[in-house]
Length: 438
Ligand SMILES: [Zn+2]
Image (cartoon, rainbow, N blue to C red; front, side, top):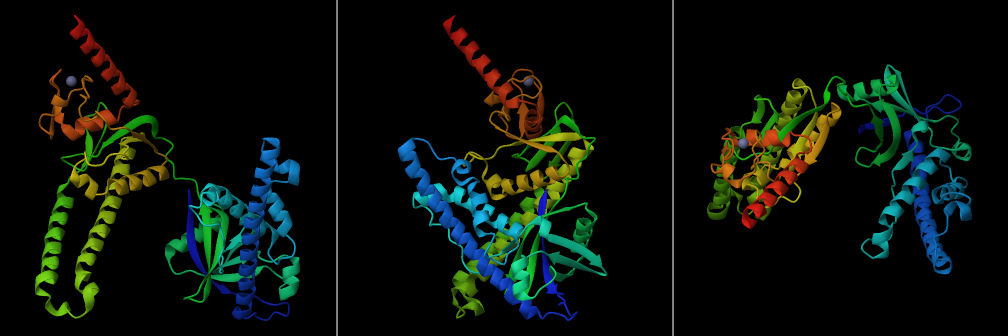
């Protein structure tokens, strides 16, 4: 798992005579490096174009594409790196990071650029400075410091800098502190990062990338599945197949909040439309502001609630020792699902569940939810009539009766449920044919 922490840097550069180097000087060096970065990036794009044109001509003549290594003796990005590692002040590893990034971006955008759907890649001023992971050194000595290898030999000579660039890190909160401590301890691994100039704060900001092993729980049973149904009667129901125990989120809390907020929204809209009150004369934006604020409030409530629900659900999965979660794949579901589901953004909830599951080493499998609400989790019989009452499931074959959402979650928690359902449907349609024929 890779994350980024934003660190504001204060220059601590000392020159060879032991005097502090003015931040202004460091600024001008880094601004120069930004210009050089932009230059190299745009020239790399140029190289990529040239290679592409050469390739298509080559293809016309030879009916095959040229091999980069045969023609250039190097890969294209290696060639670009080789081309630009001299003549600039940037440290070579950082140049290799940026030529690699540009070649990758060009490759990804090539088709769209050729079709005219995307304008040709071009890099504007104030490029972030790419820093190779080897060029970042964190230190702690009462404060946190970072040494950045930004300049090559020629660059150091040019600017009269002997050492790597040295900064003190502004640490304002405990979580940043913990992250830095773990990076220094080696518990977290620092990877390639970016240095960006923050115009407002007039400070350089290091977007430090670090990664760590997910906090996997070894003891979880990789084959034990928790099935999650995004339901009608309650927004979320989870259970392990064969177990009566279940985890559910009651819709009540969400519904109450929604009704309350919607009533307020209506009244505010009504007010602004008919009464005008004191807000008139301040322009339309001012008058409609409260309605927007309410939408914000709903979004915030949903975010907080989904965090809470996903955390509770993952705790349940761990209690149940489940190493796997099966959920409905919601893509492609549009109007046939309940209106309420769409409003409550299940995608957001699912994303949060997925992220938290990954942190614990729980695998997520998405399944096609079709027929999972019509199938009897006891005997496997599939029939739309099993759901005569929406909230209650009653099997027309074996008489099994249960909460409809619970029954669906039981089905969703079965390994290879899609294949099982497909087989059942095949057999029952074959049986039907046979009955007709006889
Ligand atoms: Zn049944």
